[in-house]
Amino acid sequence: MHVYVLIENTTTRSGLIAEHGLSLLIETCGRRLLFDTGASPAFAGNAEALGIDLNTVDIAILSHGHYDHGGGIARFLELNSHAPVWLSRHAFEPHFNAAGKDIGLSPALTGNPRFRTAPAEVLELAPGISLHPARLLPTTYPVAGEGMSTLEKGHSAPDDFRHEQYLLIEEHGRRILFSGCSHRGILNIATHFHPDILIGGFHLRHTPPQQIIQTAEILQQLPTYYYTGHCTGDQALTQLQQCLGSRLQSITTGQTIIL
Image (cartoon, rainbow, N blue to C red; front, side, top):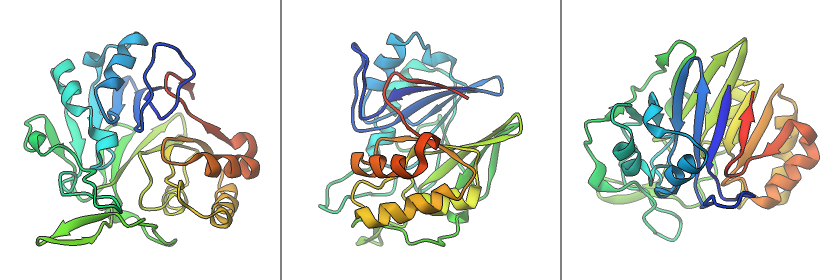
């Protein structure tokens, strides 16, 4: 399996754009998958610079309904003429951060015929490739909503992140899980799936240091290797690495992960 980081918050390569967002191109099981599109069309420019033709993507997935993961979807639809885009039926619901800023997807895209609504149950996209909705995830550990909200019947309500979904790839006896931002809680996700490898953002940017230590100690008990960045946060990344050592690596724009 090859995973190409098309967009992440950082980069060490000249000629590539980094932005607050995430986009991964995954080659596995004889298919090319696009997991998220970052906040803008920048992921597509980076793909071109890396020699990746986005028209060869077979399936696209939006992990959840926030702009920094789906902001480039219109550009993808221009560059790719055939791939379905799988997203939650809740993806286009309104989403706001703690300050009330709109962080949702562009309403102009609603109803695009290329969109495929994932069911409320596990969906097999292809042999060894499946989508798992957040509603099936037990919340054994608290979910830190950080003041994010949505609208229910016209009134503000805490976001329960029911628009989040996770991509599981089972290849050569391994379970590789992709999670865009892990809003439902990285501990809930990791302990539920028990993956061999977990790739994505852990959303620990505003988590107190002591809580990060507790999170790292629980993650350490799992037989999992972690690749993370984007919304994990620099402080959390440092603390996690101190506990997990070589089992946790950071990701950056332009990186290729070979698994």
